[in-house]
Image (cartoon, rainbow, N blue to C red; front, side, top):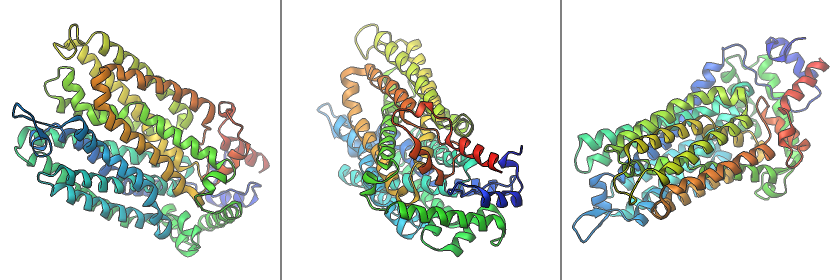
Length: 528
């Protein structure tokens, strides 16, 4: 009996017309003829993630640079300058409030004018925010406003780009394609750490932070050029009734002629799916609550997953890594941040295999268990062994080194599991008619919790120190249980098939289900 993935294009086209299932937007990759182009487009679209990563990597260094602290900090009675916990917390975390607002509002442009236009608009907003920041000479309030504006752009990008990627990628490699966004994000973080290390040690004055910030203009410009090069989402074009343009987009992605049987089959199947979606419901905000099948369940699942991602404690290390490593007695904490950035970047490559082969569910479960072990040991030795006497005085170097190793191991587990997986899951969990709205809400919740952690971490850390790790460890336990009971596997499914899966999903029984698409595909092969 033939496997359906091994059929040639003619057989595949004939087969799709015979299948009893209505949701059949196949979008197969024939050999490697089109996969390279899909990955090229994913790289160009995901460069917006590089911009986000660069911003995250540099701000953690800025708040520890002498000139930055002198310009935007407060002078103490002893004549030194320092950033208060409130001010440093706001400068770092207000970005996330901008992201929350931008993730819910700006993706509307992607629904009205296309995914490409939505991303380009976001990048121009980002450039405006960078201008506001870099012209802030002594006003921390102006810099604060600039952070909000750049946050609007990044929040929008983190919704539109994964959405765009999920819509152009074949089911077989969708996890890998969408994960490119996280890969470019981690690359940006790593290079941002490197840039701060270089300017901190080789520059004086405002060049320490203005040079890395100034490079944001270059990255945003390159992102705009890359977006323009890519074809528009064929699913968006078909949804808008632009069938001719949808055919052109499909033909570019599949590297075949516009009149080929493959493209014709794609368009017919997609039109049928869109017609059924339009019958099922509208694209209003109300449908996020009342829509079927289980739209509210899916949105709630996405919100909780995004919340739990933040409660793993990843941004505790990313935002305040430089400060944390100073507290464990490391002389060059900027260099240590580079190490963590490198681990984060390199580990993300493994996600390409894990998400599409191990599956979304299993990847999250493995990550939760691994991060729990790291956090428990990290917090325990930090509380009990790091400082034999008074806290903050004479740290034990071997214990500090062990905490750095545990931090790297934690980042390793996060980078191959919870880091990239959520972009994939939220990108394929919602029907096309409400996809951008649902993703805006779910990813917006991530930014909201990101803000809370970034703002309150200085206060909590000063109160309970490394016992803070126990809080995150507890969250990973809850995350494991939640994923096990409520998050179904979507590996190998077509985007148009998710509604069928949720029609049959019972509350709290996700652990009983095999991959839904394997059942669907098996029935199709048997019928053939």
